[in-house]
Amino acid sequence: MRAFRAGIAPFGGPAPDLPDSRLAVPAPRLPAYVRSWSPCPPIGPALVNGHPGDTAVTVVAGMPPRAAFDLRYEVFVREQGVPPELEYDGLDATADHAVVLDADGRAVATARLLDPGPRQAGAEPAGVIGRVAVAAAWRGRGLGRLVTAALEGRAGERGLPAVELHAQTRAADFYARQGYRSIGEPDVEAGIEHVWMRRELVPGLRRVRDSDAVALQDLIATVWAEYPGCVLDVDAEEPWLRAPGTAYAATAGEPARALWVVPADPAAPIGPAGSAGPAGSAGPAGSAGPAGTSGVVLASVAVWARPVPGLAAAPEWAELKTLYVSAAARRRGLAAALVRRAEREARWWEARQMRLWTDTRFTDAHRLYRRLGYRATGHSRDLHDLSATTEIEFRRPLSPLNGLPAPPGI
Image (cartoon, rainbow, N blue to C red; front, side):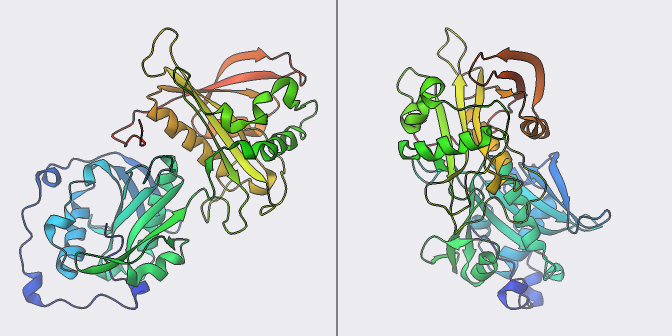
């Protein structure tokens, strides 16, 4: 994966000028899947500087505009000598692409995001960013970072907690400044030295363990304590919290389920750098202690498959549960990222709809759900518990998998 072949300013200067004879070489006949491109609706535009009239980057699902292929051919094949058969690898139709066009419709920057799933069974999935190219005349303006950041945002929408890239070693420092770290030894691809690098979008996210029991109880209890009348009695009402890892280890014949936690980690910030706006919390909010405190869980989220009664096929819907974010980690996009991770798991199960029940007192959570596309159904229920809880229901339809890979073991 060529993560950055443009040779822009972070590499120490512009790419060398090419002889006229090389520029005159006709482009090879492109593969059929490139020639048959048709426009895809953009997932969403973002402005370079955030002001109307500025250059915008647009992310499209599936095949990108032909102009993006033209730019990649110019940068990778002509400038860097990458063989065309390596550049056109047949993966573009299943990728997301970030593209910046100039006023004449020419691509001046592009990159793509692949979603290959986890590296191994039991690991969290990671997206792979590559094919980052910037036109020579546009280098040094931050467009490489712009398209990369756009795809990091798209990875978050896909429920990916991390992204990786196969960076040219001369670009490694550039990516390190964006929060990437090397995860392997350098290797050579297409005659150019590369190194794999990774950036955590949700640092520390992992499946729950029984050893998380006390920390998870503390998180939930502290969140509930912000709301008058909310009481957590583990033994009387939530005994599964004594061994959460065991409770979420589904056996044969049981509904699929998963619970993730985000432990406090002093070495990694919470959420994507530069994220703005309130994330809210799906429980309400509450402080479980300062980041970096041993044995602290900053956030949690769970999802259950809910099959149609009497049918063993894919579940009709999935239920979002146990979404809590501590005060130490709020307003950084973490709650939204956890919801997307749970939705991603539900899509593996081929659930067609996401549902949840939330306490009427958790109004911050209600705003979060609405922002993420959930709608209140008007249904409510009384739990007749120690907290005298009344819950309301929210639902959101889930889009199909769209060719995303299934995790190992499925």
